[in-house]
Amino acid sequence: MKLVFRVDCNAKTGFGHLSRVISLCRTWVSFGGLTDYVFIGNYNEFGKKILSNYSMPYVHVETGDFSELNLGKLNSDDVVLIDSYLMRQSQLDSLVKSGVKVILIDDECLLNYIGVYAVINFRFNAEKLYSYNSEYTFLGVEYLIVKPELVELRASKLNFESDQSINNILLFFGGGFDDSQFISGIIKHINNRLPEVVIMLLGDFKNVRGKFNQVKSTPHFHKYLVNVDALINAGGLIKYEASYSLIPTGSFSTSPLQYEDSKVLSHFGVHSNFGLIEDSSVLNNNINFNTFLNEISVRKELYQNAKVKYHNSPTLNLVEKLNKIL
Image (cartoon, rainbow, N blue to C red; front, side):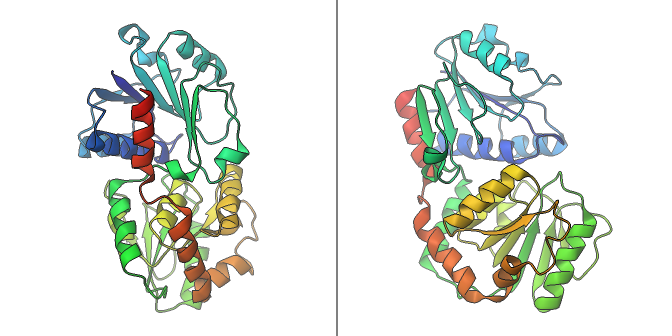
């Protein structure tokens, strides 16, 4: 069996898709069952750097119509695993008709999945929110895809429970977010309420004001999480990674999808939802944000809920299930 991972990493798609596919691949290779594979996609320099860092074989393409999968070299025993918001129904239908097994990592259930071999949607409550007509489905947070290092970090935090005070806080808003004024507002708010807290801002932001330390993006991002007491983000994959790792986290979401997902995580008590960034008043008298910063009891509750709401080894759980059907 040959497995093609079709995933992009560029200004349009961001890094989260590639990140979770690499984490799945690493776990799969380590556990066994995956030996012949390749990544295909449109990759910026950061994406190429990360693929090379993990010694992942890849092919960079300029097209975005999925024709680059070169189906003539694949047969019915091969698998194409796709993680992309950009695939249209006609492209998916064409791929299914070619006879290869198609696996999709999905978040929204927007297409017709007839003929698709398997769908993975690891959002909280996905098993109740969505109905797929694929042959197999792996739905819910028990199939969460996380880095192997975060599995280790969670295990260490399970064995040593902190008092949930905040000494270091990390701000992570992804490579596609560049609103320095909004970031400055968050930093000013934290500086005023928690003047002794060390703030780390991840990313190449310009003209940000306030008291903080700026750190550059790195393929080894997980290392920043080891000594972080809280994390504020833009509502993407990182909110899952942080809460899974038992780090209290909350988000100012940059899109309606991220906002709706943050509300679901908040409902399960593992995450704080601070609202949509597009709401210009989101920083003014934000009760959720203020209690997250000031109330240890709130952060303790997030920690305790995250201990029981997540599977300890969800990616391995997914790999074991995939090996059974492939």
